[in-house]
Image (cartoon, rainbow, N blue to C red; front, side, top):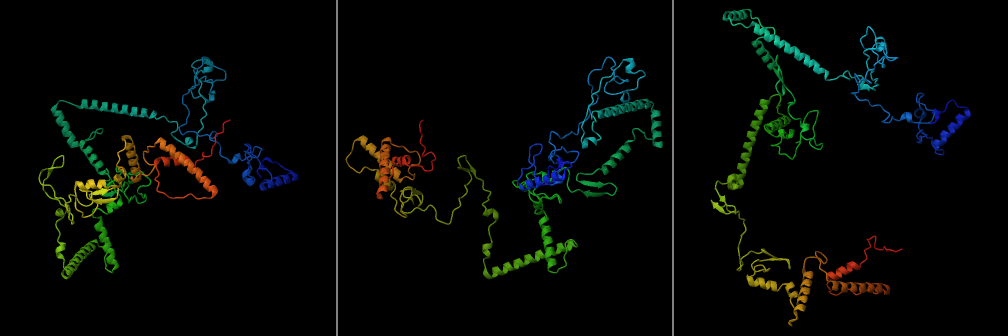
Length: 556
């Protein structure tokens, strides 16, 4: 029914066809109607929504009357928008123009709308003092601007009032000074007479007033003034404490983080600390819970708990009704509880004993706090006084047995992973110390040194012996070091790497032939993998995860 707004008075046949078209659009067999902007109109929209009112009907199906106006179409006047007072369209004319105001000669208004003083002889006839044309402004005012009583007011106009009052006050002060100068006389008798007359008549200057009256006024105003954080009624002398001193920072302004302590605006309370990183003693405000656990608050809470427990047992105790009785009963209860505790402690000690273990040294002595003065140098040596004794354990320390000069566990053998003595490098517990000879023997019997030593007694040439020694040393380091093969800084020999690549190619071809023939290669042997062989394997293997592994560059 979106197009019903565009239909006037229809015949029966046209109305039936319109109904069938709407039904087909709702069923989806016919395309939806398009509005002025080419947007499809939902056929399921009711008629009272899709049909535009008579004052917005454009004769075509549209839903523009249901949409908000664009930002450019809507008028958003500012609250400070006002007419530009005294603005003129240009300089005044020299002669009177036809159709202008007959009074002032401006073209922007007629004689009946002229705000100038009616002239005895208008500008039409005198052709003199013709006013300039005003600027006709059309100001679009919003709802608030129309109802703003101060809209268009210039705050600079208020300075004129200040200047006027200041001038009046200066003139009044000058008149008072002249009046005082005229009344001043040098005759002592006249001065005494005026003073006596002032005492008897108690006449006061209407302008200045007396000093006593000023002092009384100051006292009156001082009594009526409120102190910080309280409201004082001068008549009834009743002080009413406010909820918060207004000069203090509000609790919810201490930490503006939304995830900080919760502030209850109804009770104006913040139980947790707003700044948890700051110590409660140093914080400006540590929360309501901190105040509840400080000062006499815990004692009051214990007294309230005692009153509740006593009332639950059937005793007539109420802290608010009779606080003195509750305080006395609580004090008596604590004394009886202390006596009962001392009696129970004495009976247990009398039965089982052990009173001597309860007598401990003072806390100052247990913590090692003494008044002994000790002065140290920059290197840590004692210059004056006696050095503090080191705390010793209950186990024997620095006990050397079997001629050892170090204790068991002072040396660790990284090759075998065992502990021993650092004086002789022996890893046998309670063995006899052999000193430096034992260290030399241990190093000589090391597996790395045995493997690196030459097996043939014949002394080869220096070059061959050096290469063999280096090769064997590298092999030993490779086999017995904690580094994995291929880790760290690897130094590869180009000749051995080339041989390893050839061997890897032969091995790959052999594996393919074995797979075709169905034979399994024999697995075994004690061959050690070298760095060159590992690098050759890495270079020859096929990386299946690499997306460019099967890429072949075909040249055109």
